[in-house]
Image (tube, rainbow, N blue to C red):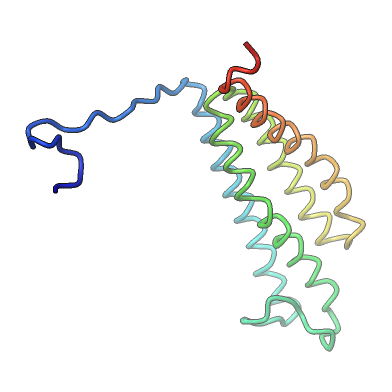
Length: 160
């Protein structure tokens, strides 16, 4: 038995579903790109802090014996915390963008920009410096979460 994209008689190819994307989906893709830039900015901060505070690989965090442990660990934690939610936000962007590309991109950019604020605040002012970025980033992520549920119940016909 043959598997692949040929019909059983090997004469015709299988039909693939076609998804038509709204041209505004390009904004979603730009937002996805911005989320990768965000990660790059935070990676750069951690790399710079490693050199500045003498924290070398493979150590993820600075040991308490390092006099700058708190400073370095704040920079590292800002990056780590962002990574903890980055993939979930990216999935929400891809899925929700199929339905509402402009709104999805706006919410995603709010999240990206406020995570930059979060990262710099945490790195420069410690744990309290992250709070503004944390709270503002919720203005981006909560609507994305709400959108996915709205889109799910819409597809299931509960809103007809």
